[in-house]
Image (cartoon, rainbow, N blue to C red; front, side):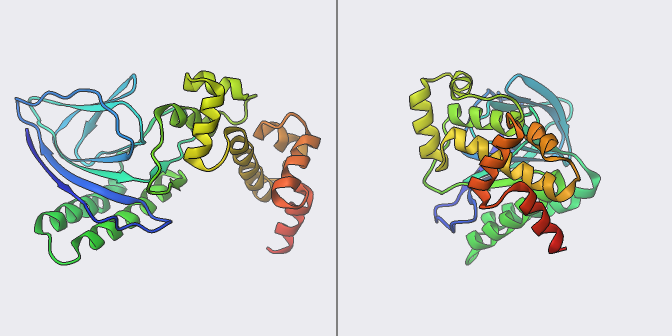
Length: 277
């Protein structure tokens, strides 16, 4: 296995950017054996050439040239190369980054011809910069990463969260948070989230709040409010329909939560938006 890793030692990070930890170039050779593993950070896995398969949690899918797999923190994953068509790839380790995925998947897979030239440019340039290590190369790589993340978010229609650099997600908290992101319309309780996280609910609530700066139930409400704001400004759905769509138990409870969060009723919010158009 040809494997070259370049580690970034300078914390070139501001409050609203993620941090590039390393870039790794790998080429499959017959002595390589892969195994499932996790990281506290996100990995961006870009295939330069070859083919094989990728395992994420309990799902396996094929990968090939120009595919990009984004694996969020604390997700079990590994790659397996074809013997006839060996994998060659670049991996970026990125701290403080999390893609909000609205379905049940634990990853994002990009395999579009529209994106391949851009992806090839960003990954190869970051690798070349780290290999040459000229003056301010880490700044160059960090800026390229920031632009790459914006492009991926646009293409995937997936929002991106940037976490404080010193905080690491626990696997238990990230599991519960992903459940909220994908199932916030359902009747979710703290007991249910603790069950998903598989830890004591009091410890879970404390850990979640410490990690994300907000309690799990407040995060759930926030997710519902953000979604209701989108529906209020982009549809003509009634308040009752929006309340049901966002997981609120009733229109009155929806209005109560919305007023508390936004300082006005949902109706007033919609009228204000229409006046500003």
